[in-house]
Image 1 (spheres, rainbow, N blue to C red):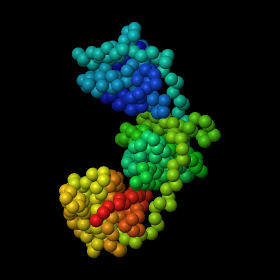
Image 2 (image 1 turned 135 degrees about the vertical axis):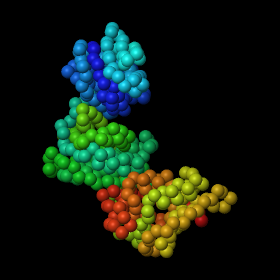
Image 3 (image 1 turned 60 degrees about the vertical axis):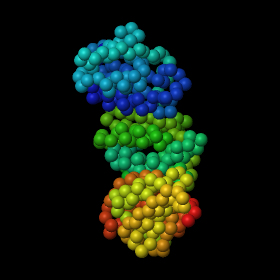
Length: 375
């Protein structure tokens, strides 16, 4: 094997593929990245749950296939100077050089590397930046507790030309609806994907034009979802289990509504939250077009701040986890937030607004459970 490649092409491909390398592999081979040099270069990586591939052009003078340590390849690739990079296989070593910088990589047993799953057939496509934004808005609400694997995922529901993404950790719920171009106009299916995997894929695909989503037929035993964009592919096995019903949690009516400019609201939340922790909530008192933020009581550290807002409805005294509130305010990605209430002890729903007097943008909803507190 012998080829020469431009540094940027190599780094981009290695960064993509290294995302699926296992930190605790069941076999040493899964620590590696496969380099397959033919008419073009294909890099492959897998942790048996998620598999990634990246293709790029290179000057190939000798074809070949080899397995090298993935993390080391990634670190070396990023550290090399911005010059053409040469790869040469000599025996059980791969010589990597760029300018005067030279490295020797050991190889791993290629025969022990698993056969990666085939990418399902394309089911439709969506703008990559739109997809990445939607995934990021939802993935923040996914659980981190691996003992509850169903809640660590993002629920993906496809109904004809509409995709609904949802995630919850039981304390908050994020739901995003968006349209896509389905190849089958009558497609209806659901999947549950690992939030970390989906977020990594979406982030890495920003800047490309379209993301092709590939879904394995429901009639097959291989439950896979694939993503394809600009020479990069990812296949991921879906999570087992059923995502909890969520639509009934989103109220259709409200007893009070607040419209608040996001930037000063976020600043106030972050300041007052300095005296909070996981057990100390951020208290919000809504009344007469004002919002009073408070935290801490008695001999504890205390903080308070007041904001002028647009508010209609009954007075509401409610408390939230400040981190979860901050996540929601950041995720809506608009200048104003519309908060709907149905009571002080019931969840509030955050949606975005471009202007104080405009209609709420209802394709993204962030539901936040209140915290109990002693006054």
